[in-house]
Image 1: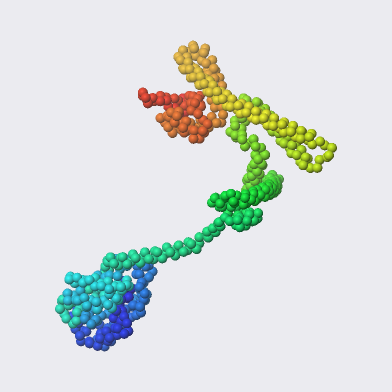
Image 2 (image 1 turned 90 degrees about the horizontal axis):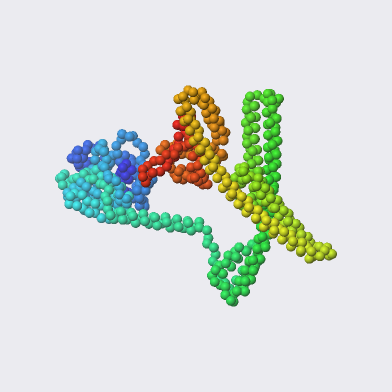
Length: 628
């Protein structure tokens, strides 16, 4: 409000030509001046012919040329109509001057009173509300008073001593707000109808809001236009349009197709012409020659591919040799650390030196191991590229055949025979290639060509037979693996049955031992034998064990954990659906047989009635451990 007051406080001196006479009138008639101020209850501050209050205090920081500024939106952040006033004493109130017009006089309010309150400024506000007007104030008097703030477009006066004034620009509203709190007196009359304390505040008007929205839309359109121009400037240029087909253009395109540098651009044009449907009986020969020219680049591309592959092989070999050299240096550094860690040299180092040497040795060994793994990975990739069969063979089948102990000899023999046949096939291929190379060279004239062709044909036929034999052996190997899996599953099932029967026998033996304790004679004669038999059975069961592989032990751990968090048990389908997420090859029958082999760990119970009757498996390992 201070800046607003500063902006409008100069209405007594808005222009040198307009308002100098007003100030002269202020200081000339001292008697009328004192009478008017006494009637209003204001003590005169000075009557010595000088100005009552200096301009530097009344209108702090006012710029006389403010009325010549362009329209400014006061809602824009960081924009103030006038520069801020210089910092003054905090206790000094803002003192306003008395304003004289032709028909009325405005007296300021007491400087010690708080400034008049205002509402929140509406966007684009150009209209003010003026209340507290004298009853005899006419529209001409109001216009005369507020014309000093700026161009007045319209005045809507009410019969209840208030009006609405609309200015041409928004900054004029700030000047009009400066008059809020002044006491207005018409002429020199002291009648109550000729005086009143005016209150100026912001007013909402649909016309102001509409003009402000139009201005905002205009600014938004300009911003979109600038953004579109910027985006069009940054957008890459569109490709040039493809020319239409003609014999002249076809001849030029045929020359471009023969050039390696313009080949890509020319093929794009050729594709566009064919796609447009330019091919007809008249132009078919032209298109055929252009397609033939495009096809002639196939040999060039194949030669470039072979050259790039050769460069890649050389780069691979160079990279491999560099890695081997680095690995050799790592080995030498590791040997140095190993020699330094021996007793005869280690004792001479201090504790800090030993610690540093140990840290360096561990870091060097880690880097060497990582480097060695990288080289081994490169070698494995080369071996996989050399052998086509290793890609076809499943790694799961390899693990199963290695773990197999029952039919391992037959699988190993088939694998050895398969490898020997593969090497023989490679030898035949090499021999055929050598014969072809010798045939391409200048042969001796006395060698018959028919014998060479016959020998080549025989070698090809034998190679074909070897391939057939190799395929047959592979089929036999796959069938043997399937039979091996079936035999292994049957063996597991029978082993579970045997272990379940053995556990039942052990439980029955324990029951018989409890009954035999009732008769002392039987204890002396038969207890020792039964104890020995039970110990033998338990030791045998412990040696054999219900778990035959690491996979079954892993399944038992997962099942135990799952059933432990389900104290009320779970059916076999629920358990199988959970474990199948971890191992897709497991079956519900396998899980049931595995749990049936361990009655002391897993117990099967029936729950439910009628249609809801189901079998649930529970984990009872903790109870059985205390009972054993």
